[in-house]
Amino acid sequence: MCLGIPGQVLEIVDDANSIARVDVSGVKRNVSVALVRSEGIAPGDWVLIHVGFAMSKIDEAEARETLKALQLMGDVYTDELKLLHSSQIE
Image (cartoon, rainbow, N blue to C red):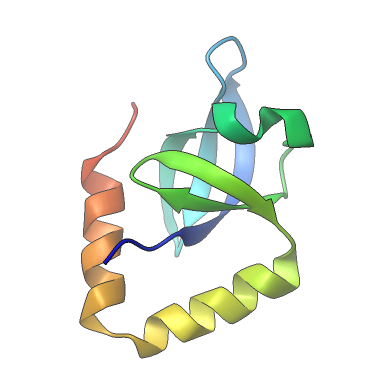
């Protein structure tokens, strides 16, 4: 199963390569925001992340609800976080 994990953009760390520092459940990671740059990505924005790529921009309410639902999934959520953390762009 593949999941999109919500993360909040902290900063754009490499504008030329569309890399942002994102807080994912308390863990700060670099992810590619190239696929969502046209939506206007800035610090404070929320994105859904899958294997190191922001796949879509979402609002905060959707991010919070998704995080709650994912936490209820237990191991599936934990496994996806491990995958996200291991597929880092740093």
